[in-house]
Image (cartoon, rainbow, N blue to C red; front, side, top):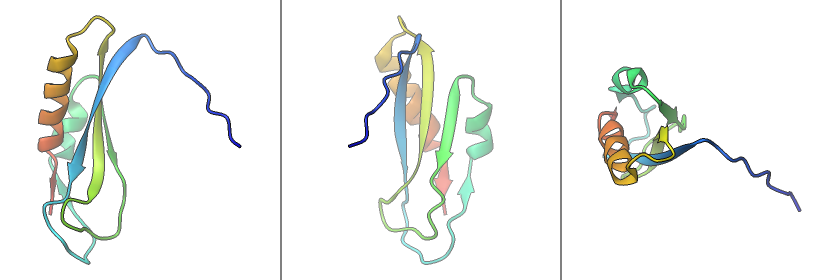
Length: 88
């Protein structure tokens, strides 16, 4: 059995999924990722899947802020950033 290591951070975070709006056997392409990557305290992870299915998880946006930050506002900003990434 593998033991997980716990990491304590000095920040709070939120994530939002990037879903595919299409189904295709072709390699997916993305638009808007450059804009998201320029945002402060934001990470973009594209999973690199070879094809798309309707509502398939294609990536995720993760945002960080101070421990005392408004978590609801952070979630809203993270969802807005994920919505900027278009799968086509």
